[in-house]
Image 1 (tube, rainbow, N blue to C red):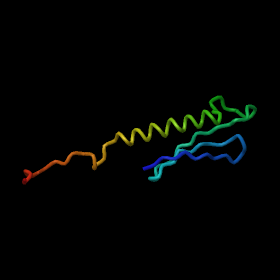
Image 2: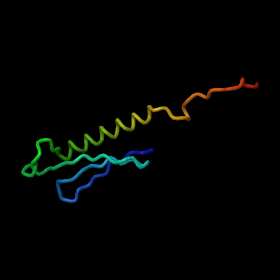
Image 3: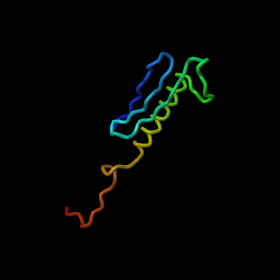
Image 4: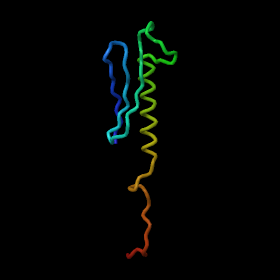
Length: 84
């Protein structure tokens, strides 16, 4: 399992960072606008803010997945006594 951050910038100083999962889970996007005159929404992030938000989100997702037990980490329940 890996999580990647991909930068999308079709127009200079405007774009997004995509947090992409290799296992097919839907991506999460963090949009930015670095042209002050074009920041129409008050909550619009700069490129640096969007990158930091994407990194923080990816770290939380990675840590959450690492702490989730999988079948390989679960103890085996024996239905019969072990034979030595």
